[in-house]
Length: 238
Image 1 (cartoon, rainbow, N blue to C red):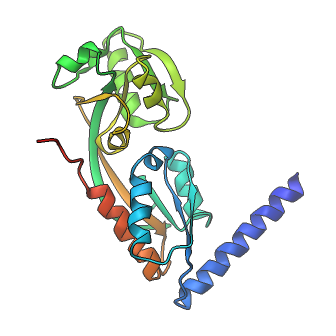
Image 2 (image 1 turned 90 degrees about the vertical axis):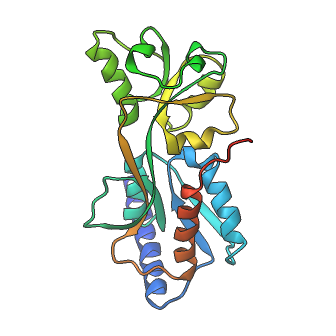
């Protein structure tokens, strides 16, 4: 198993070098790889890939998912050409282009009592079962720590390990959750309500790649499309 892992890492590195040589020669591949948290596969990435294929001769798209740290590792180790994540990133190893900003929101079932409120605050969460991701995301920790500050221990009724997985349990009425405006846009097909949460933080999302890497026309257009789709705001009904 040790030999297999080392050999596999070597082949990945060779593939990365081959792609780098091709990019230096100005040769674009018709296969691209994108790393992003799973939540963006619900809406943004399918829309971006559909738009990209109408503009570029893309044969295949490989998607890599994970936490924001794992997404950065996918790009750093050459397993993905581009990544979608939020700052901070190490500016010594990555270049990026700003995509969008986001603020905190609370997500709950339409029949929940919170649907009567315009803004959700920490005191509104007291006693509520939470459907949350493992304690690693700042937007979730803010809400939980706000409860602890008030002397109330959060009730983590459902705990998941993939960003975006919690919305299925919220839609089933098993708890409420927190996210940010950009990630929550991916939940349009789920029967949930979304409200601003205060106090809020500001999150900066970027499309990024290995520092100094030359992006050919196809990858440049991929960056453009990802930013376009990230900047698109949901349309409201008249």
